[in-house]
Image 1 (cartoon, one colour):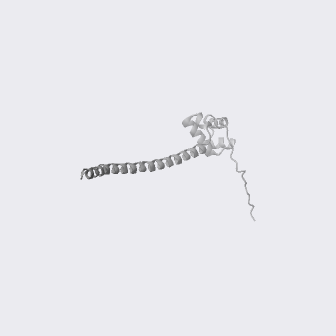
Image 2 (cartoon, one colour):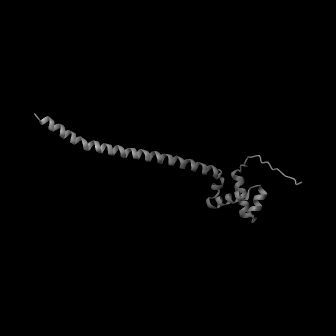
Image 3 (cartoon, helix red, strand yellow):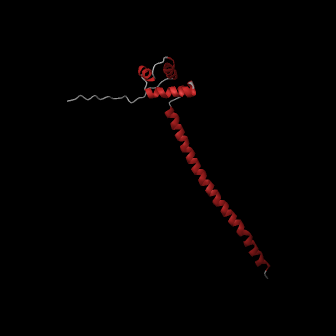
Length: 125
């Protein structure tokens, strides 16, 4: 019978401070070690370290020190949903406005006809 090992995770994510992120990324830049080795030594997932390094190389230290990109993506999605809703409401109001303009134009075109007809009746003996 083979042994089965069950690994349980606490379910919590580790939070890295800005200084820790910068220190770890700097190790990959200056020590000449592979990113995987630096990640293993610091207990960071290699793909996360690659992302931090890419952010730092593209945007400097400010990009790395910012909050997790998942948060900003969530905010962007919420804003896009809000924009879609506002555009939908704007479309509805624009359609209502056009309908009201057409109704107003039709009512204005009927008024002179009605007035002309009522003047003729007044002129009759």
